[in-house]
Image (cartoon, rainbow over all chains, first blue to last red; front, side, top):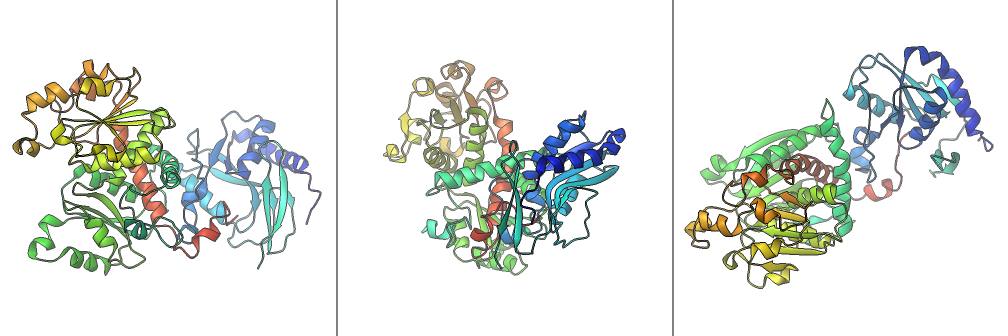
Length: 166
Length: 332
């Protein structure tokens, strides 16, 4: 566990890592909810020209038949065409990889990007799909029963670790 | 009885048969969910994979191009497989009963039936005979209910007018025989509309109409005074043969929505119609095509609202759903 995780420093490291991509004029897309908060910070730090896109992957989840509709779905919004664009996909926590899989499916329903770079604030163990982040703010070791969640956004970001039981 | 049928043991929607008895919370949950589906229709690929692998049968015992089409589009946008059956030309005309028809389709592993029937209670009857994994949506039954139409109507009102508490809404036309009006009144009252008026000749108003929690008017001009929303109803021409109204010309002269009558309502009032319209009978073309008309947005909204209802009722079985819903995202 990283009890004293400095989120601002982690976001700054992400921004540094993403700097090399600026020449490709990337489009940044955050995944609701925590990913949008992190993407908002990165978008400002990098001074990207195109507006920030947002994705809510609720309609693309692979567990809909088990958990049903998320009652607080936020509409996805990709304000620019992503065909042939380089996309930076941002999320808060990379855990099983299923959210990212859903996000990739959704992105491809909007168009065919030239490339997708995955940038996450926190990477933790527990991958269930072959998905890897190219940019990571912080590697965090967590047990399977622990659940990391970004809270307090968009202004005061804080990572909470909850014991999920089982 | 409907309440027990419509909800599962956890109090969640299992079938969608009527607005009657739905709480404000349930109605708002449907409207909020529909809101998020609006954006799907604005994408280049108007499809999400939510109901991939599910089969939806549009079981229409009564013709309706518009309603059937919007249900079909809604199901297809959710990636379901859709089968359309116009039963009047099929098995029931050969003597097969309604329930036999449904049982046969059920045996083909159908998860959802969208049912329209000319008899009140048909969708309820089917819902009470299907196994737990099969869901029913009422797409209009006799003069009883048309709940998805009412939901798309209140969705359209909310998107143009915001909250309901200050709204005066007038429903104009054949209140007596209209399943649309009945469901609209129930939805508007559940949402706390300030005032629901019904405007019709006395022959087309139910007796003791006030029990529906509406204010009746027979004078069109007075009834439209200061209203925020005007919901016109389609007039069935057979009502004229039944001598409930004198003639088309006379009805239009007294109850037709013309620009002059519309001017009695608030300047920003919206005009709605469930379609198909009888131009020159219940509504003037200048109003139907005018700037205050939201009749075409109603049709567009109908797809999102029907997507929301399908997604909500085809969610998980009751035993796993409530616990899982506590988190906003189960996977990361």
